[in-house]
Image (cartoon, helix red, strand yellow):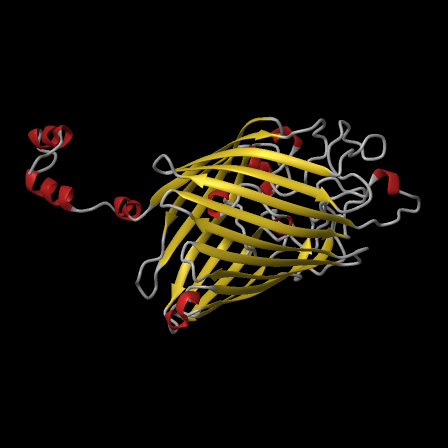
Length: 414
């Protein structure tokens, strides 16, 4: 056996024996044992954007979009994941930590202090547990992603680079406990309880955004549930197709639009979601659909979105993805009331938008997602919703009915 120089030196002066040192060398450190099952992964997400036309004060307000990204080169986010996955043991335990660095980290809005200008955020941080109940009952305890939605905050998992409006009105991050159970290959369920439906870590429903105690009881919590159905192999070409539905209800201290005239902070809300991914007779083509409805306490109008998706794997490396979406924002969660339609007292005006997105992806380099995307957002109202050079809706405001985007997204996954 080969000993290190410090062991040999101690043996030379009689402090230790080589026999005892050999046994110590052969014994695995508990720390090394734990680290051996831990994985480190992540990605670096960058983009280049061109917004034809003049004025970027009012860009389409879907998640992770902002005037600072328009007409230039961007570092979007760096994700670092440290994880010990669950294994096959009955009482398996593990954890996951997802850390975000970069401008998009501020959009997550998870910081427990409420300050979101550090370019750092915790996306997820939970302990994973499994109890030997039936097929295995899995738990997440801590901070985890929302259980509803067709798209992910992780760009590389989405068919398109830019996010949908439906994704932008969904709950994103919650602090609580989530239980998941798979009854069989075709049916699974999840249910959980959290502090609030807002993303701020450790937030409470009885504390208002201004830091004072609100009207809700100290025991008031957010509740969630979802079901997933998967078509079995016996269904022919539909095998693997999924149907998903979920509901999340609770208090959201951070609810409010990107640029609302009247921020809707400190309200109870319920998010309803239904989505499907459908295989087709053409193995290279898959279809998708998503419906999101956001019900807000004492809301002046309805806020909901419906979207259709199509993906075509043309070759091993080349794929095309499309999305068509209609969004109605009667509660002004994302869109402000058009300046020329503001009257006093304030008269609610419903914003309606059409989104068409086309994406071409070509995997030229190993571990790299490279895609070119064109997006068109069109206001269906009689007044402009985009453009402009002033951020003040009343004195400046949007000047265009259409917003165009041509973007190149490059993601390295490690």
